[in-house]
Image (cartoon, rainbow over all chains, first blue to last red; front, side, top):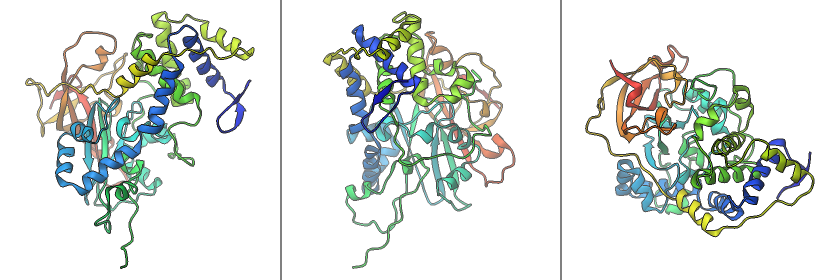
Length: 207
Length: 221
């Protein structure tokens, strides 16, 4: 086993990693794949495309009812208004939480996920336990995530089995009146938009 | 294909584990193989489907492999199928790198532009067809089937009756399209299933599962 110098720490490279490096090396040597094209894709998903995009969509929908209506009616167009769109976001749909409905998203067959607004999926989203259980015991799964819903809240689980990609629009928490979109976006994390978390409650401000 | 990738409702995997910071990946090679896989597609270096190829992995290997190991597997299979690489090429390069050879470098700015352009493009489904067989509100049943090849009809909904919630658009049936067959787009429906119809009695209060299904998967009730 070879020692590979990582950005963060030196460690032994796995056989899979060595194989991945060899495949890249092979295609580079033949001039078929360029290192800068690979770098460009990695940088795109590390810097430009991630849950910060989805949080902007949510915050904008919270402050602008007309935008929210456009988002629910044609998510592709409304998301594109904010400059987001691309691979694995070809057919976006937004599903809104209400006091009586909670939405959550899964892909039981692989790991379909709305990349343009949430980036690449987290490990747990791709893991067998989540893919197996989100559809068959969603309330128990949500409890493991720390989300304890009232019994009268209907859970709707969206299995991304075709080319539609779902974004959950969480409810705006109380005590956020007058907040800027930036401040609102900061309380919307990735899991809120998958439906496995709720925005953190906000304490009333004392003036 | 009724493989282990079709996980909806399976038991025995334990709780959902979320260790520490939830990054999409943990090692540098992972996003690089993701990017390489995208390039294999866009640059026409591979043949055959990606997703369906990952489903063909040996079941024990599929379950043991990380997400990006599966992408490595499908990239390599597609390159082999096209003849871009041949059996033994990767092992030979692994030996050369292990012997201390430097990683070969290749730079191509136009290729970087092409892949970024593609990743920023959207290819929406076609509009809802006039001849869609079912309409929102209608009860439909998922056909009993046991396809050998790729399918996007999960096992856990087969034979189950649900209600059409929306028509999403028109798309080519993946069961045939991923193998390069010319097929006409057909309606894709969001079908809502009650937890009772899917799983029978449960300790949890009732919920709904919505699955996007091509018209070919459905029959009238």
